[in-house]
Length: 316
Length: 249
Image (cartoon, rainbow over all chains, first blue to last red; front, side):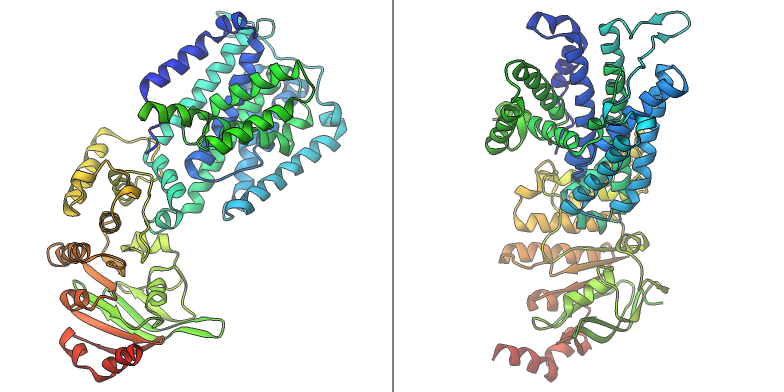
């Protein structure tokens, strides 16, 4: 069984995440890099809810990531300059889109499902690309920025303090990841494992498989929209690349790299991917070749991902 | 009233007629075996009952209700559970988890994002009971994929039983098993029939198993009804002997 995780591992992960703004600079990193890891880790873990725990591969999660990002950016720019409202609206836009598209694709399996998710994703990409007046087209949506959070009694200046933004992102990450872990331990979560393990058996145990896949899809896409929303706020900017299919591919790579059968695998994958990109791209423009090579090596030699290696060491 | 009533059911695949105008009635508490040479249409007939396919013509009534067009999951909700010729379990989950999932589904909890303490206690107790009945208690924490063929089949049967079915359908429960395993599974089915008073329909190749277990036997041949009766009647039936000998010769 996939234990969602052993407890000591959980504690180590949370301690590392909570202290990251303090140790990252000591290791040659910077706080925004930590924020980026948290945002992409959330996206990859959201994808893994569907891929690793329901057994359904989506190659179009960038659509909902991008919808979250555009929803947030457009709320800030056109509607109201409120960070919490922008996050709420951005996430809701992605969730509603996923809920509507879901019924059209949940009957498909395997490659057909993946292809259709790409196709729907590209529709949103082209809309963002072409609808210049509203989305800024290829230039992206700029000339807006996140606003400090005002709690009445205190203000959290996420605009000027990188650390404050990191902790805001981490708080949302904790909320989202915590809910996913909670769901995976519930009867509903076990029906998803059942579908992953053996769809025919699940159906003949009385589980309406398509409906449960739809639910898993909507949960996963909602979480990825939240990640997209935080991504827009992190950069104070969004452009159509956040919606494009290669962005979806990045989520899949992060997940597989870290290990899709372990709960924290996608976090590890996202961290490796982003740190490598940051490090290699400062030396060569060709960073993608190197990341690609590492990905191929991991898949060939450690098909259960980086965390899969550690897990195997721990049990043997 | 009969629990399962099948009226003139046929199934065509293109020009092939896999099941040709077959009727069958199963009474509550009965153990019915369906036998026949290879290609007799037994498994197709079974798949029509459980909703894997819908019939080309004819009607299937379960407890008086027409279920001919219902999806498999709905037939399960009405009280039908099945096993497969090739064992279908959740291989990477433990035996306990394999049983826990259907217990939760049968308790109407499949959409629950959380579980109350009282529900959890009830579910654990039911799982323990099923483990015991299937002789699987000492293997409860093992991954099902690692177990012997016989234990995997016992797990599958207990998963079906976890749904509290009114009708249990077993597709060749002893297929591919050695003598000891065949004996164990036969005894398990016998207990379910005699002690739990379950209504069971099974397909079986092994004649020892069939004659040991069945109250009544229906024989199919090339998609058509050949004979029906008690085990001694079937053993004495000339048409049946010809069908089997004809195949052997």
